[in-house]
Image (cartoon, rainbow, N blue to C red; front, side):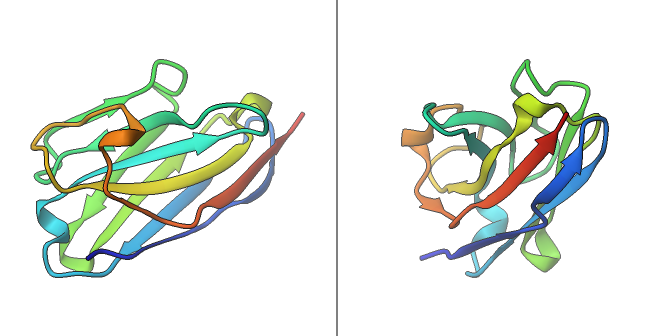
Length: 125
């Protein structure tokens, strides 16, 4: 069992930056593929970014490519999402998720086994 706790959300102006953190419990964290998803009001949850257990594999949604960077620190059981050049359309609840069954990054939320409670990101125009 893995528990995930996100932090770092908040209110920021367009063009600003935020860094989200996700702290995981459990000894096998380093073996999991990790992902960030987001869900805006009235919209489906969508994939934002994912990272393989070795950090050599990263995948991004087209909407955030070049602006967001995902990283992980297996020694500290942490995953991060650095968000730069934020836009109002990035406003959403952001979730950290763990996939225990794959060596590569999957974009479907149904493939992920564990989820955090989410952290709100609001970007004002």
